[in-house]
Image 1 (cartoon, rainbow, N blue to C red):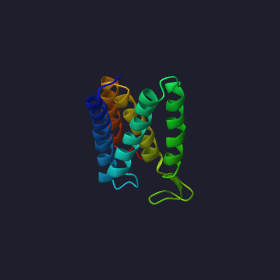
Image 2: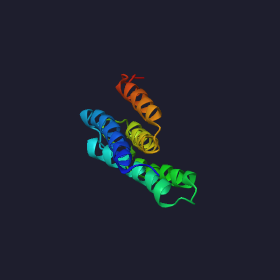
Image 3: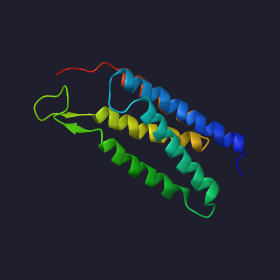
Image 4: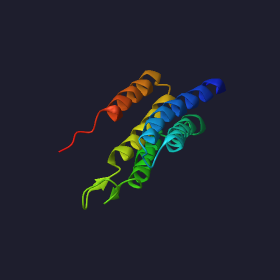
Length: 136
């Protein structure tokens, strides 16, 4: 059994890392920003911990796969055809959708106690999000 203070610290770590990724998206004026990313990391972490702590006989991998699929639907909601700043019929929001997906992974990793993994994924994601966009 994980002590409750550690449960809270894991959730806070995931939420903090999600906030950092969300702040980057918000600074860029993207539709899913700080609050969205924090809530995704927190929700993914909460589902992960609930599966570990509340359902000892259940397969935690099934919960993880459910979170991945569910967050995919959230990400799909920020993808637009013909969105602002796109060419005729172009697609926008793919990077934000990917950042939502990665943020759920960060929340799950932090909740599972995989701190180095959660921080490493966040750092790499932040570096990638800060790369300049290359024009055709």
